Each structure stands twice: as structure tokens, then as C-alpha cells.
Image (cartoon, rainbow, N blue to C red; front, side):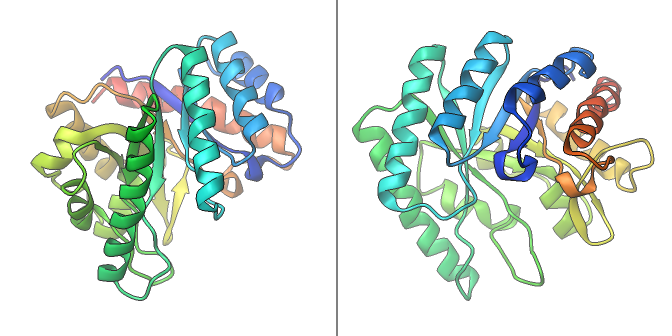
Length: 267
């Protein structure tokens, strides 16, 4: 497999580390393995800066909708901002959304998420925004059930213009092995998140002693069989990276791409 590998960047997680420093580290330590950034921020100036740095460094720019709560008005401003960036970059930008997960039951989560996504897509279609909207499968967290691979079709089948971000790490976290994707999921998949699972926690780095390498290999083999050639986002938590200073942690993250690229090439 020769998919473009993407660095997942959550603005709040990296503290005061300058965005330019992150790109410098990628250029110094990335061995040309990193092909883009998926940025998670509600700061529209930061969003623009990241997009322009991606353009300067010939990297793909993609977005993860902010994890922080945003009002309907803030959400519209965010979508318009990404649309404006798409015009400057001259390509359609993918935005990953989570399903809603604060309700008491899966049924309530599904109903509220369907309504939420319908509003998002309605706004995108009304103003012809140059973005893809993609929904990610979540995992059970702190014994709270969330919308995972087995339930995501109920949202996808309601919206024909909704795409699918398949999070392999979340899937393995829940099911101990990768799921067989449905025909609908295969037809809509346009993005992949990947990370390891260890001691009941996800978002660990993928390295040579990763406990679930076999399961990750199986999931990537499944993607190869369906001819998935889109981006693969390495989505690692800052707290599991090696180093005392933030810069050291980012260097560790960036260096890990070489192992994953070699791992992927042998699938």
C-alpha cells in the first residue's frame, strides 16, 4: 500500500509550541514520510496558518472538527472558513465529525446525530461549500457506549452526501479485532484514522513492539482488498509520546512515521 500518510495535530494538546516549529520538525525528521496535516482547532487564524504552511510545504491540508463544543453560529463560521481555504488551496477539503455522545442511550445518540449532521450538510449544500463532511466511528469510553462501526450505517444511509472516516484504533478497541466493513461503509470511506491500543487505552503510537500489530495488519489488509488508496491519519495522543518537552514529543511522533511507512509497504 502506498497511501498518503497524515500527521494529526490537535492545537490544544501541543501547548505553546509554534506551528512553524512543528513543520520544521516534520521537514527535519520526517524522512519525507508525511504527506499532510489533519488539524483540530477552533481557532480560525490558527486554521488558516496551518493551511498556508501546508501549501508552502506541498502537503495535504485536512480538518478534524473541533472537539470543544461549538454553537451553531460558530460551526457555520468554521465551515465558511474551511470553504474559503479550499478556494485558496484549489481542492476540496475533508472535515471529520464525531457523532454526538452525551445522551443516555445509543438510540438518542443516533437520533440527535442524524439531526445534527442533517443541519451541517444542509448548510454545506445550500451555500455550495467546497468541503467533504465525513463521520468517524467512535468507541466505548469509560464504559459509556458510543456510536461505533456496527452503528455508523444508520447515519450514513440517511445522508447520501455523507462520507466515512474509518478509525481502525477505535474499532480494535471495541471489538479486539477489525470489523468487516459493510458495502455502504466501503462505498463512503474517504479517510482512515489509525493508532494502537494498550492497557485499555487507545491513541498509542504504532511501533515494533505494539501489542496489536497483527490486528492492525489485518485491518490494513482489508483496506488493500477494497482498493482504498486515500489518506491514512496517524492519530496519537501527546501523553503517550516520549520526551519531557513538547518539541521532543513531536520529534518522537514524526520519527514514528518511518516505522509505519515500512510496515504499510509490507502489507
